[in-house]
Length: 163
Image (spheres, rainbow, N blue to C red):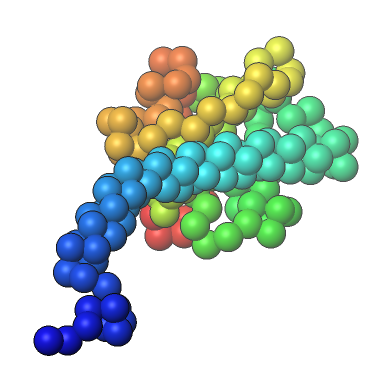
């Protein structure tokens, strides 16, 4: 008869218990990490939109232009170039049809969000910019413009980066 104390290793029951515990932990933590990634993407889009808003105002100030209440003195490409924007950038300047700049719509389809900000009373809305999930029904710039800007608002200039 062999002495069981001399055997080394784990029993099958011990291994099954450890595997079950790991499975339970994975089932609990994976959705948490998924939510963290989604939150990070949303924050990245909000931050980028704020950067483009600031860049537009800086460009206007350096040129002595009034950045709202009149025609957009810069194209979306110039704003993105000023910030060193990426290939994922889709920035659209929005007008009321009479050359008055109403604001911007910024799409980042790689992250699945868009953001917007509105120009009012010769200043851009300084409230927190919130990113909206593209999956919430807004599939393109025209949908975003019609949902977030007054009737008659149209895209004036858009970066063309294949999105």
